[in-house]
Image (cartoon, rainbow, N blue to C red; front, side, top):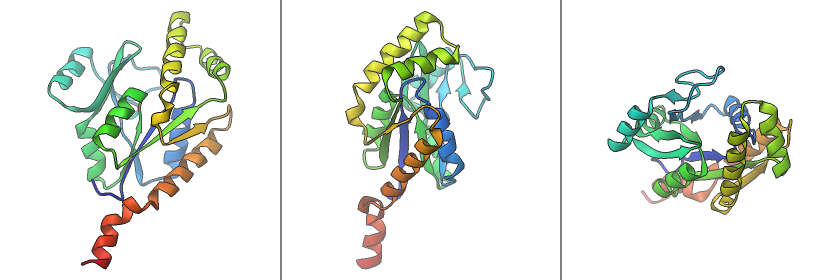
Length: 205
């Protein structure tokens, strides 16, 4: 991968509003392509195959693991999620930057594989009670599942120090949060490490 390109990784607890923020960001940043993850979880009514996820069976997912087809994968809430090497290649072939919306475990795995290219952003609501209220208002979680998601959220937030940036996504302020994400990208684009190869070629040929 060229040094001037990078992998933007966005994580955050379920209910933090990260998907909305990411979608708003992508509308204004055509040089980024969202990497579509594979998952074994059931498709929701509003989700589209090949746009939101690649929905596969657990058997097929495990077969892909055995064949080494994932850059990263994780089991979350009893379902499997993963980013395939083919998906990364698809984006790179389009000469675009990559945006990954993945959990903490997956984010750290990608950062380990691509330490120079990875930029990690964590999206949080204002407080834990706000997160809980957002999950309840979605009306898609059973009480047991809600408790599990909140426990996972606490564990993920404890690892926020591994991230480069944090965005506090206030309720109803997703547009402002997407602008903050855009600001992070603009700063990253002018870092010396992303231009070093070009500088060497221009001044020490």
